[in-house]
Length: 83
Image: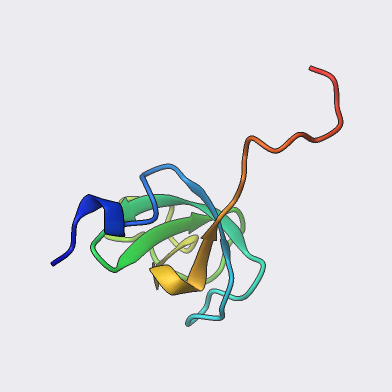
């Protein structure tokens, strides 16, 4: 049974590809535009010859990827710059 606590991502999370999956390769970054029970639709920062994740994102920039192949980026990390 899948519950919300089993789902590691939320809509809008910044993610990085941790394992190659189809046209998505290690190190590619994007944001989640869909979150299912076992995969996420990611809109990548760069064109990847993907699709639009059923019109949820920009055509050619998106791809569905299983959770184990993604890691959440820490967007709250200190960058060393003053605000």
